[in-house]
Image 1 (cartoon, rainbow, N blue to C red):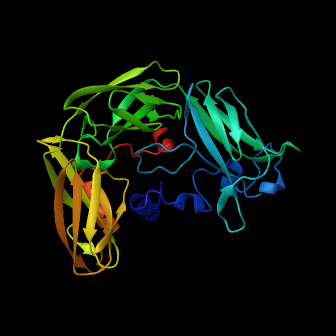
Image 2 (tube, one colour):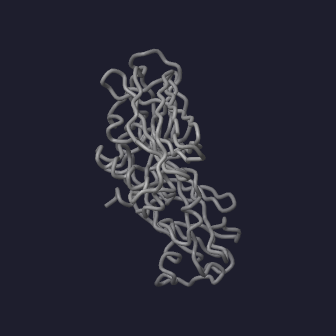
Image 3 (cartoon, rainbow, N blue to C red):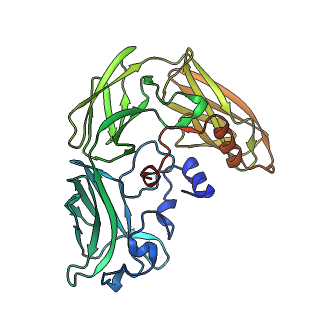
Length: 352
């Protein structure tokens, strides 16, 4: 699990490359993670520090670190291979290589440069081996798995517990939803998944945006892996109020976290948010309704949140850094409201 500083980076700067510039991360191959050649293998000295592997990204996960996920049977996943340079940074593998899998769990369908494409073929685990084409010696290897999809579910954006109901299927036009492909109790990947429906636009392999649909019930279809087409119901509505949840102050010359929620009557509704601020710069966060606010000057900061044609403005006094950091306050606030709603479990955590 990420350390607090890693969590801060991911919350405030979701596009950060932090996880792929670190010399140690959970996408490391067996050789990279142990520092030695695995038992029974002969290793090529050209990759003495081993390799790292970056798999598909699953939408709306708090602890999404880019590790290789479980591939859906019948589905695909692209895996990028990284070497480690003399400064400890990850760089795309430039050596020629051969990619093989030692079981029937998946097959290497194609490769382009340092990226290979896996196709799940059976409910099993296996080892993805990257070897030298001239000597057959090991560059590195990593365990992979494939599992059959047994159900598909609709999920809300990642949000603070009190901001909404994670089981709510009420969406405002312009908002986004996530289709989660499930095998038993954890998510699997099919980057060839298709999400279709009237007024629905697929934006990623597992994410969609709701168009300008009329208020009322609607549905979308999902085709993924070997599973038959699944129809999922959702509802379109409009927010009638926006609410400020957190924070009450902004740290001088630092970053604070400010959160809002949208309601349709007493119901939670998923909306598309936009933020502006006076005396501060706003940074996107992975938590829906929340924004990082970087103080740039003055003794007050005004944050304006816009969603579904509504606007709310919150003036916040600026304070000097106190004993409790903005990140610690944000974590405590989230915990007091039931934590983060949405899929917060990492792949490996979910498998145990």
